[in-house]
Amino acid sequence: MDFRVGGSFTQKMQLAVDGRMCEYALTGTYDEIVEPERIVYRANFGHALTRVTVEFLAQRESTKVVITHEGCPDDFFSKTVSQGTSESLDKLALLATS
Image (cartoon, rainbow, N blue to C red; front, top):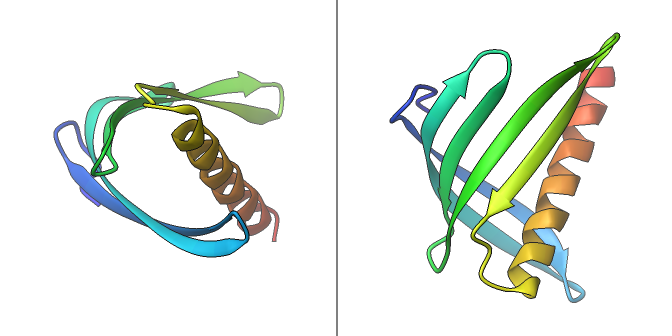
């Protein structure tokens, strides 16, 4: 991971889709990094290129994270990305509280 504007990363994840485990990989390039407010990057899934904005919103003693994907080509893709994002955030929450 090269966490700077213009830097890139590769992400792999496994999730259950239609009852079977699938592995997904994507590459990305950071377009904007504004600490501690937001990260914007382009995610290349091979067959689809999306723009992802991750916003960090201070809320008293915690932080709300809002993730917006733009350019999803269809409902199946949107559902799969949403599921993968939710599972990833659930795993992160477990790590952060342990």
